[in-house]
Amino acid sequence: MALIVQKFGGSSVANAERVFNVAKIITETYSAGNDVVVVVSAQGDTTDDMLAKAAEINPNASKREMDVYLACGEQMSMSLLAMAIERLGFPVISLTGWQAGIKTTSHHSSARIVRIDPERIRNELDKKNIVIVAGFQGINKFESITTLGRGGSDTTAVALAASLKASLCQIYTDVDGIYSADPRIIKDAVKLDEIPYDDMLELASLGAKVLHNRSVEMAKRYHINLEVLSSFSRKPGTIVKEVVTNMEKLHVSGIAKDDNVVRIALTGIKDEPGRAYRVFALLSRNSINVDIILQSIGRGDVKDISFTICKGDKEKAVEVLNANKLDLGFEELHVSDSLVKVSVVGAGMIDNPGIAATMFEALYEAEINIHMISTSEIKVSVLIENQYADQAMQVIHRKFFNLV
Ligand code: ASP
Ligand code: MG
Image (tube, rainbow, N blue to C red; front, top):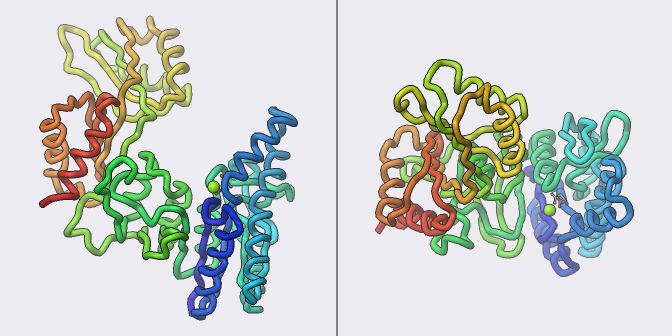
């Protein structure tokens, strides 16, 4: 007998029919002899609707009261799901985050789980109950209700799996696993049977948006086997784990696109020690994260430095750079926001210099110009014009995944 944590996202419980579909998945797992702890999100677009409703009352409501309110979305779905399971004739109990012992920091609207006291859940499992826990919420040391940030139910599920030492944590969603690229863009994207945690983290931060990033970080830290699968298709999904058994065969897990990039170029900076330091120290003092950095070879006694930042930091970066123009000593500042970052991700990359070459070859054949390149142990990224983004994804994907 195993203990399995199953998490169902908002779309999986969006209406009565889907709630019963999920109830069947849960009760089948239970009937197979497993202890089952379920984490559930608010139904469908409930959280968005609640946000809109709260804004009608007070657009500047305190985060504390917003948390009290938003936590209700998950409480409604947990009890509805429990009612469906009761109706199927199985023993079940629903618990709020605080009843389930989920203790968090005090950062309302983006709290982090500090620890879980699992006694209550253990007692209910001992009584042979199926336990449904509201996702996305907990309680802080002042006994105020907190929420974990949008999409936080994945993190609730993985934290419970770690605390209860579950053998598997299944994340049920509306896609049937992790794909080698966004299937809406790349028709021949393939579903991966397995993917390493590190690749998943890269793909999530690069915009794959299937799992909450914090849940993957936590799964990695506690060695939790995560499975991402669809509540609609009932097919095996993708297992996210430490090492992929088939690593020899495929070194690339996926291709991702990230359009949240802006490139800033500073031209005519004096070519002497300390200049790059001044630029990046200034950005860091203003909490602006820099991703790719490129410095040109000096011409005469000047050089250019370009770098990428997130779109949200654009105004601030331009403002602080211009305000310090004299001290930094650049001639001109250019901003390009028509670029995207396309990346090939794979943990086996470090041993395979051919991967970057293959990616560049695909872009060359499609006559797509590369503006910037960055490489790390597990990814190769290029910056290109966003009008070519989808085409670039296609040609790169074809090179790596549809080898004939
Ligand atoms: N209901 C919350 C949200 O929509 C949490 C979640 O779905 O994981 O962000
Ligand atoms: Mg959701």
